[in-house]
Amino acid sequence: MSDLRDLYQEVILDHTKRPRNYGPLAGANRRAEGFNPLCGDRVRVLLEVNGDTVRDVRFEGTGCAISTASASLMTEAVKGRTVDEAEALFGNVHALLTASESSNSNELGPLEVLGGVRGYPMRVKCATLAWHTFRAALHEAAEPVTTE
Amino acid sequence: MSTVGGTRTARASAPALDIARIRKDFPILDRTVHGKPLSYLDNAATAQKPKAVIDAVSRYYSRHNANVHRALHELAVEATEAYEGARATVQRTLGAADPSEIVFVRGTTEAINLVAQSFVRPRMSPGDEVLVTEMEHHSNIVPWQILCEQTGGTLRVLPMDDRGELVLDELPNLLTPRTRLLSLVHISNALGTVNPVREITEVAHAAGVPVLVDGAQAVPHLPVDVRAIGCDFYAFSSHKAYGPTGIGALYGRAELLEEMPPYQGGGEMIRSVSFERTTYHDVPHKFEAGTPNVAGTVGLGAALEYLSALDPVALKNHEEDVFGYATRRVAEVPGVRLIGTAREKIAVVSFVLEGVHAHDVGTILDREGVAVRAGHHCAEPVMAHFGISATTRASFGLYNTREEADRLVDGLQRVIEIFR
Image (cartoon, rainbow over all chains, first blue to last red; front, side, top):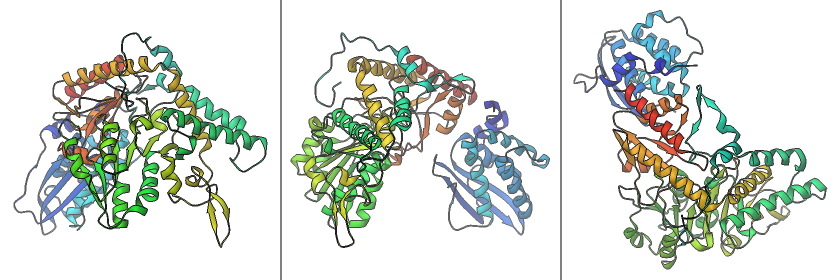
């Protein structure tokens, strides 16, 4: 049985109250919007992609603690990565959030904290929203991302 | 506070409700959730069922199950009596003139769709109007949007104020010669507002506009008398009134139901069928195509009988006491803003907590065994009115207690601690 502390860990709460890389991005050349219609979480991800590197990243939006923390952690994790590395990271985080048992995810480092969301199936979409939106920004999808 | 019949009920000398005994009637209430006792405060979403309802459904399938109406054998006779007996129970509960004015449907949503397609659609020309209110549940918005798309009609909206009360001064302006129906909610699921449906129906009728009332949240909490209200249609759902899911009822005035074309075609709603010509059954069977949810109606009848066996004054006093207590205690929590502060409210305490999203509130409350709902409650226009995306909603039923309200507030303190 999952303990609330698995979900609302110190790191998650820290990123909720003091989100990193929050705000506009002047040099953004890729962007995407994401929306969870079930609860109203909204996120916009702005990227500055140079060659094949994610040079800079910001996010904006309103949402629950999990969606905000996940977005904040995402921006720290992807900044400076190559596009391929960022894609791989998306895959690993997605597996972490949706796998039925814990997978070998040593390389995820600070993102490990998101694993606690697995015990709260109703909140998984809160955690994945920012990541799906980030991926959409990478590929500059025309339609806004939705969790449905 | 008045009942919808317009009479004031006396608070003074009613016997108190034996809440301990009543809670024992509901098997699920002794569950634990995450190791904590269950405090079920999500009754506006669905209500729990007394053993009498569970047993009635079980007994129907064990002893009386058959298809209804046309067969000659004993079980079919018993099943038909059970089904039509439930219809008579609904008729008595709503105060309708005749059982033929009660149509069984899947729930309030289907009832509204039925009225939209069978009553309003034949009367709609391009440019005609349907009037709803700003506080409606999506089930009383989307069917009208679909209808307007189909017919070239316009959907108009009676606004509400920041207390969550309808701006009744606007009503005469919105009842125009092109208005084909006013459809409004009796008690708002998101705000708890009780609308003065009798007075509103009078105004609408004076303007020649028929009225449909969504009673989904009302039947569990108020005595309803459709003839006193005067409305043309009244809809409710069994599962919110302590009955099974998958069944509800639409009351319609006999002369309207008589002239309405069928909603769905199929068996049971016909008199005779050939490829040249098919004739339809009388009301209400004309609107009940296919084998009905007979077990559901049996459960619904048992639920309504359970409710009617309780002393109505004691029940009302108990619900008002717990609801008033919960509202006061929640309002005192630092950072809480109540959403929906109408002068007449029942059962629903919706709120936002500063700095914490409703989803987080709901998740943490769940871990304390407190079941509430967090989200837009299928009332996005209500959320938009208050500039928010979601509220946390605690909604009370007949078996809830002050103790459960205390657990709700303790849970909110826990939320504040975590997010401090």
